[in-house]
Length: 125
Length: 106
Image (cartoon, rainbow over all chains, first blue to last red; front, side):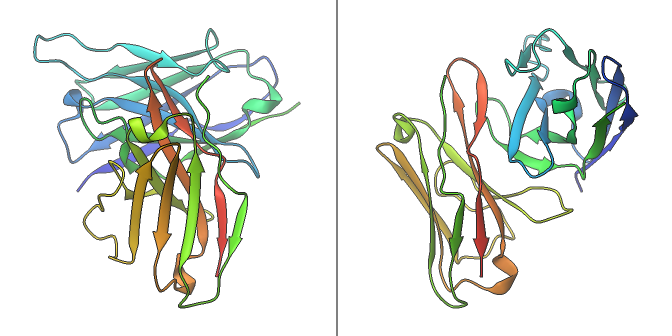
């Protein structure tokens, strides 16, 4: 059974930083792209970032970001720990959201077939 | 940048058919997916690759994608289908795009 468990959210002051984690299990983590998607209070889903999985040639780890977070957020993964990360810096009030970890369906598919329960990030002084 | 537009809300009576549209430039040339999101829960994939249903998704959920519009159809809508529904696609500029979401009231 695929499981995704986010952690690391909390209350942080504007300008602060947080590192979110997503522990994955139930599938070969290294083979799949992973993503972060957020939902601000009362708003819709917003794609934040994706990191590719391992390729047949042994590469992978290519990162992609939404324009709204480029330069402030960094996505990374530790395949040995089956864990996805999101380092979020220079936090702003409009970064307040539930952050979901999501598993990509596979190379060339570009949709998310499993999601975590989310972790809440609140940016406030 | 590529954008997807959905109606903010839709209301149907139980047993009726609900059709939720998602519009984007040449969306029919791309794959579309649909997610169901209920308050306090994780999003659930209900349609992928335009019309395919994941295992466990009831047959009353169907979808199509052509031209500039993808459509999610729920036949015989039930009260448990009340949720927010989001379309999603992928743009060649390497961005994953969600529609603004449609709140379905049953």
